[in-house]
Length: 317
Ligand code: BT5
Image (cartoon, rainbow, N blue to C red; front, side, top):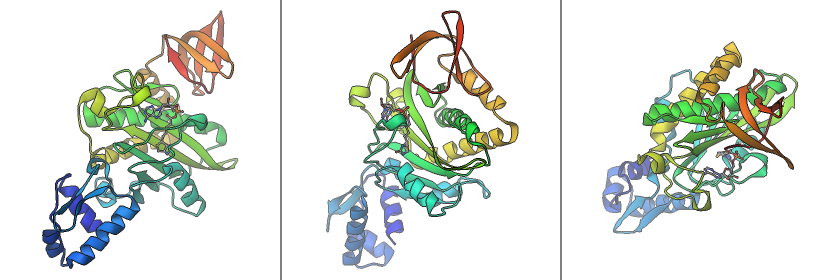
């Protein structure tokens, strides 16, 4: 019943739903309906309104109705389990716990808002309502050293998905940023949960900025689809597109190796052939980015040398 109430509120698109009418429609007493609404609020759904007036769901644009997402994916999609929470600390933290408890591969965990969203290397990921925050449990049959390729494959997938949804070209920035109109619109966090040499458990975390209007001190480098293109995006609409692209490129990589992903990444890369600098611990490396090599490393020509980097933060100058 709570799911039906949510769907009704979602379909009203932020407008008031009169409780008396809703209770009648669902064959509930108003007291029972109010109990369900209170329980949904306790779970973290942002529902405003008062008894005898009407209730409305805020941030309905980023609510996920798992059955609706599933129905837009092929029957044998990798993504059979889709779980939505209005609020979590971090979808990747929960995904890790669920994976350790035996949750199937392809399980997708989504949050409407994260209290403690994580970026790479202990950085913070701002995850207010308005974005799409999700993690996926994967168990690729790959040796540990091949996992970094997945970051590049998934960055390309998100870029292609946003392009398919918006009709606007996206770029990628090595190794894990998706760029829209020169600013970061999405980021990828790939974490290895357990490791035996040839069977890995990977938690793929993806953050996509959809409808946020303001990034405060990050405004100079962060954007959302809304900010860049003035298009409002419904999570329910874009998530199946992103998942389809993730599965397509994941299979491409598993079946054909890194080369086709490398070609796509290079074609979309916003710093290839440009002057870049990279901060490596306490050292700044500056030069021309001449390639992304067959190992997924960033190749920099600097001071007559070719330097290959496997991690770091690229700045374009
Ligand atoms: C990333 O880290 O780009 C990976 C982000 C992954 C977030 C997802 S959300 C679902 C899942 N659950 C999690 O807890 N995490 C994953 P990195 O390359 O380290 O970028 C982090 C840096 O980007 C920060 O230090 C800020 O400068 C900037 N940043 C923070 N929040 C941002 C946002 N919403 N949009 C754009 N840039 C942001």
